[in-house]
Image (cartoon, rainbow, N blue to C red; front, side, top):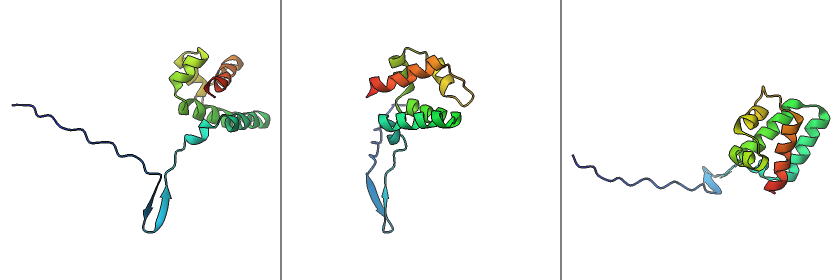
Amino acid sequence: MDKTKTLKKPKKLLKKSMVINGVELLSHDPSAIFKKHKEIKMALSEALIDGDKEAFVDILSGYVRAHNILEVCRRTGLSRTVVYEAISEDGNPSLDTLCKIMTSFKKAA
């Protein structure tokens, strides 16, 4: 049997908007908010002031995942295991770990 080459299907590009049944639908990127460093810093500080650990970890987790965990590891010098444990729901990161992740905001901007 001869193997035949098959062409890969081209990926469809996301449109910014489309109209279905007269309703305009806009594309949504949930990670886009995590690209705005000033807003993330303000949200994290508000969560700290309010004493809301769950909100703090959720915001930090979203930021780290939106910026690629490996990239955050490279900027902070932390191992992947430490970063994953810090952003997990059951994680209890040290202040040193949090400070290193937070300073990666400066390097990313």
